Amino acid sequence: MSHAVVLGGSLAGLCATAALAPHFDRVTLVERDGYPDEPLWRRGVPQSRHTHNLMAAGHRALDRLFPGVLRELRALGMVQVRMPQDMRLLMAGGWVDRFPGNHVVLSGSRDVLDWAVRRELLKLPGVEVRQQTEAVGLLESRGGTAVGGVLLKDRDGSAWAGWGEPYEWEADFVVDATGRGSQAPDWLRSLGRDAPAESVVDARCAYATCVLAPPPGHTADWKCLLIQATPEVPRSGIINPIENGRWMVSVSGMGGERPALTHRAFLDFAKGLRSTELYEAVRDAEPLGEVYGSGRTENRRRHFERVKDWPDGFLVIGDAAGAFNPAYGQGISVAALGALELRQALGRARVRDTGRLPEGFAQAMRKRIAHWVNAAWMLSGNADMAYEGATEGPLPLPARLGMRYTSRLLDVATHDPLVANALFDMTHLMAPPQAVLRPRVLNAVLRGPRQPASGTSSHGNSSHGREYA
Image (cartoon, rainbow, N blue to C red; front, side, top):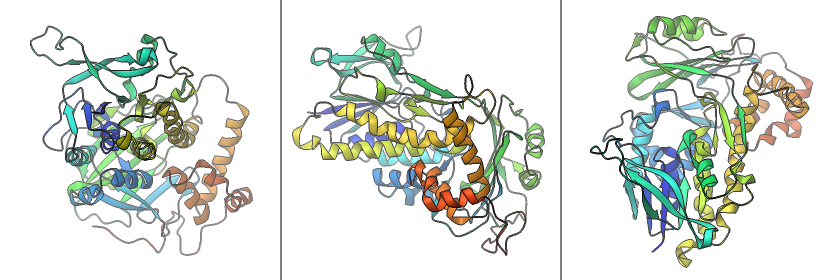
């Protein structure tokens, strides 16, 4: 009877479990925390108190892993935001013209998203969830050439340290989806293997977020308002629509500036963005809760794909493989796309028919997971390199040239739909980073920015906008 184990029960783990379920007789999902019975915050997802957008490729992958979940999320109140026609967007190059596009963001609270996906997962046959259980190591099999399970321990209120003694849990395949805090490098060392090299870009970004009720009588020609940071004005802010007609509003500072966590300081910080539009929208809004902060936002990727003596039967996915600055909204999409890639590879390998994984399966899958990490890194990691101190030492020439091209790209994209669509294809992970180097895009970028189109104001509003109560 084939058995797989997934470590970590956040969205990456939920997606990985759904990918494995059709191909294994039994899949055990191991989660250190306990799940709430309602869509509520839990300790294991601290970022859930902050703004979340599901990018186009991400929510399409999610709906393939959990058919019908997008319909359920919309029924629960998550909001579709068409980009750019429903979004008031100030990029580094200026306000982006509003035009009918093909990119849709799903906006809502992380608590609702997680809860809906968990409910869909528990409908799958052969899935069991072990809550209040933590992985502490890997087990070897096949004479030390593969991983054959995990060491687990359960929360035990009667124990002095709150946890019981470790015990063995055998499996044919183990997936680590434990997030930024993954211990996989240490686990590999304990098996006598090499730990992966790491790449880190840390712009020292810190967030503050509050849920607000829009001001009475509020109308606007946007659903979402996003003001991006620049190295010259290293502050950003976003108003996201969430369930029940509320706003989730986040502001952030780069370079080590941390917004204070009071409502008055929150508003004062918002007043210092590159535009006062966000401040003007929220200054009379009613706070519906506390202001919450988050400071662990570095881009960190672990190059598991480069480890030469990789043990078969073990894979790392999601933030445990590549974590990104949440400002770019890439993490959930990368996790879902990696899980979908895993499901498809298992199908091609006919694991359900043969009852076993082909030799070398995990080694090959590492490169497919790295592919999606690379795609997101081209946006988040490279963009954050522009901030002083984000990397150690001077930037290499290719990175400097890439930054110069990106700067000009952002200037041109504000008033050129062709270039803007290529940029959105990349940021939504609908196309590889090379999309912004297509000949027509490259020619437009080299020509440089043009004036706003007729019918577009100096602030980037267009005749395509409409009002939303």
